[in-house]
Length: 97
Image (cartoon, rainbow, N blue to C red):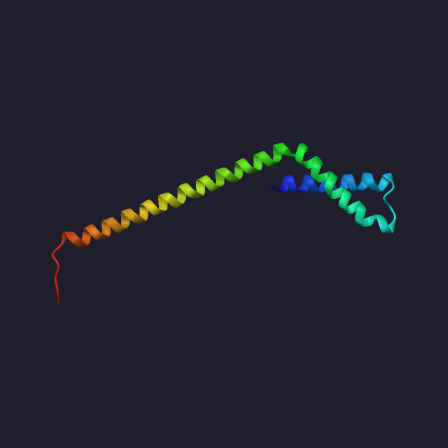
């Protein structure tokens, strides 16, 4: 994710530099420079950085799957412990005082 974010920022500043060199230098054109840089860099990153997005989404899906499996195993262990505790109570004689 850090690599993807860094590449997005570099693309943004590269586009902004190119637009600045093309003539968007005046003080009244700064907002236009920022907006155009954001839009153009977004379009470029959708195409160019597709592989990085897919890799990150796969890593995220694997992490969520591992977390769900671990949670399910913890739940199974809790159920087994509760069952063992219930069985130990039921197996011996009950004394009332």
